[in-house]
Image (cartoon, rainbow, N blue to C red; front, side, top):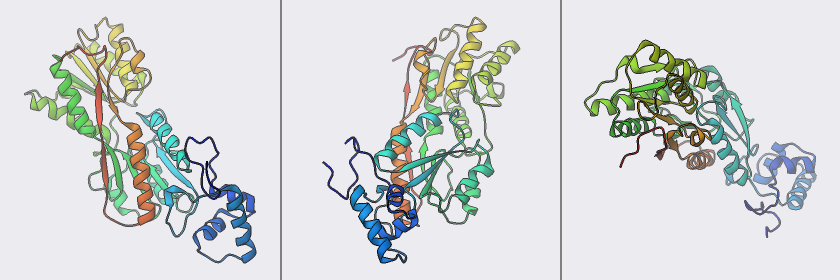
Length: 349
């Protein structure tokens, strides 16, 4: 049972008490509660007594994200993503929400559309509105980030930006793509299509996956045929269907597809089925992401899966450390991946 003055632990069934709840009960601003709790700023004695009474009554405990800070602000972080339909954004958002709630942290989702200025705007303009930012970059570059003035603590999610000044929790895009292509080659494939939307950033996920695709082919004595690198206008089922339909209509030979996002793979499956191509007998398909439909597609999709819960946990830990410690050396955590074999590839070893 929670003692008075502490947050109820995760799973206890008791509601999480946040700083804004104390502020509402005491009739003051969140900043005033922060000043009282952390012993900063100037607060009238009567106001301080009212805030401390509300803290005692509600059983408030300072936000674990920023425990030990001299100036706790909002109990809130911003999670900036290109959009919930982009890659593994939706399941990652769910993991961040779940783990943040257990820590007493509110999460505000900020869609950026994968646009450079909107991504930079989140990092520039959230100061004072939240304690920190988790950003899944699609267009910003390391140079963009280096030029930003220091402000709201931030951690990058997903993409490798090698010389970025920000802490990063990265999916191993290049290594994962290399492993996926190697897996397809071991399953007997020789001409592997790379299907995806390539963003503006040369260090983005698509570019890293393209490099892994090329490296695996070259290591096996093949080359990356430009005719088999299919650029799509979006990471959607429609875009995947149309790109593969066109390739089939042109008569270009291929025996495998590596789709950079799940929706593209679903579209590719439909195009192949409509053309009478047997999957996996004639064309094998691997997707990045492992969405909820992958297991139930016909045939079910072999997929590269990132450990999103581990990604969310490390991101929150790094953000907490950055909020608490301020400046310091850049930190990076690489998230493990697995290839889940299903019916869209030929079983082997």
